[in-house]
Every structure is written in C-alpha cells, then in structure tokens.
Length: 362
Image (cartoon, rainbow, N blue to C red; front, top):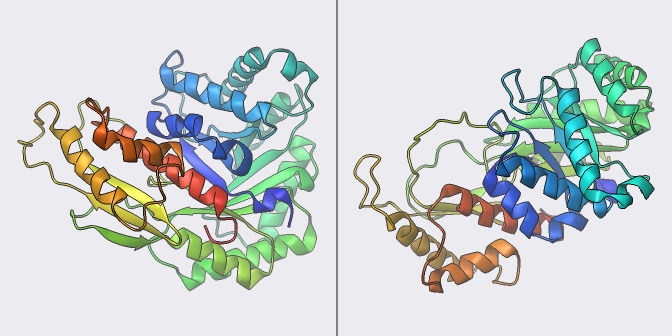
C-alpha cells in the first residue's frame, strides 16, 4: 500500500479550535493528510487566517502540503472575490513565510480542492492557478449518485481541462454525515471505486464521512459508534481496493452558520477511542437562560475533564497536546477552558494523534 493510501485524511473547518489543535499536535505533520475547508466567517486580517497560513507553512516545510477547499466560500467572503484569488493569496503568504525553502523546493505550498461538479469557468480558473506551479488536484465527490460511466467522463473532463493525468487527481468520496451503516451506500461506493480502478490510476482514493451529530443529546456518559470507520472498512473489504480513511474529526461534517451572541453550550467533550467516540457532558445548573455566571462554565468543564482522565479510555497525558491539557487543566489555578473552541481543540488534538497511530483500525 502506498504512503498516500495509508495516510488518514482529516477534514477540518477554518475555525479557532481545530486550527489550534493542528498547530500544537506534531503527529499531524508527518502522519495525517489535512484538508482545510475555508468558511465565510474567516476575516482576511484576523487570527484564524493567520493560523491557516501558519499550519500550511508547517505542513509544506515537512513535505505534506495542506489540501485547501474553497467550496463553502461565497461572494460575501472577506478572503477574495473568487476561489482562484483566495488560493493565490494564500500561496503568496505561505511562500513569503517559507522564503528560500519555497524557491528551492519542488513541492507545492498547497493543493487545491475542486468539487466534482465544477463548471468550465471554475476549471479554467484552477488551470490558471496551476500555471504558477504544477501540482496534483483533489476532486471532492459529495454523496455522488452518478453511474460509474458518467463519473469516469466527468473525471476525464476535469483532468483534460486542468491538463493533468488522472494519476495526478486525488479522489475524495465525501459521504458527509452518516448516522448508521447503510448497504445501499456501501454498494454505490464499491461500484464507483472498482469501476474507476478498472479504467484509470489515481493518486489516491479516500472515503470521507463523519458521525458527530449536530445536536448533543443529554448528559449521560456513553460510547457512540464511529460509523465512518465502519463505512470505510466495509467499502475497503468489499472492493478489494486500497482506500484512504477520512473523517471530520470531532465536529459535524457540515459547517454551522455563525451567529453573534449565540448560546454558550454546556460543557462537553467527544473523545475518540478505537471504533467509537466517548461522550461526556455536564449541565451547568448556574445557567439562567443564556446568562452564565463568570467562571461557571470552566468549573463544570473541569468536571468533564476529571471524569475523562479517570476512565480507562483516557489515553494518558503524554498521548497528545490535547490530552496533556485535559489532564493538567484540573490542577491549574486559572484554567482557560471556558469556551467550546478550547474543548474542540483538545478533542481534535487527541483525535488527530489517535488516527495517526491507527492506520489499520482508526
């Protein structure tokens, strides 16, 4: 199995918590392929885009350029008027940071992601971006129901428009949110993947999915099956093909619309274990509507962290940056754990370290 097929794919949103985790979890750099989804909520001069650039710089310097997806951006985005403009701006900032290393390296600074349904104008824009430096391209197939013959024609059209060989296309079959393993979904993926493999060679083929629900239910500690792992295993075994595992970490696959003054959530964590996710939460009894007394969110998250570190599923303080913080925050005089972005950062760090160590059983 090639290195690309063995390297798990982690899709993350351009949000504070996930990016903080990536920048602090060294396992990500060498053993996980990251795809960053840029969102309209990113301010062109803000902290989040700086973290995107910083992580892209770190990844490029280690020879594993980040896959950058602009699909969710609209014309209202502060990052640029078009996907090409956004990619060019990002690449310029990454190259500026890399300096001489970028000039001497044959590796690109980033890899663009295009949707399967990209129109001719969109493909021309990506082709012009590729003129700066030749590189592979990721084609993201979102819950496609195309017959294999039509899928082949579409991929051939994309490769021709970009002047690339099909062996320079990474394919991502994105199944989005999966609540349960469905036979029809497995069969459709197997048909497409085996049909493509019989015709062309591709740089890699991944099945991407996530089972983290949009809404958290209740406060009872429990384990939830990671259906994305079951889906990947079923497709891999039925197809007999080398397929890259992909997931969305500890968040729901679809981005949530930003809302100012949103409700502060009750403390919780999604903690990845082999084949499952451990859910721990606490209700904040001091909350009155959306009014939360200062310090109370931190206090009840510390109860979440304390329960976790005393459970047999806890991987240990040395497992990742996130695990270290989950362990030590309970003893700090002023722990900075009062926001969901911090909880997501800790959980994402642990998750990335987990999948980086678990190539056969994520």
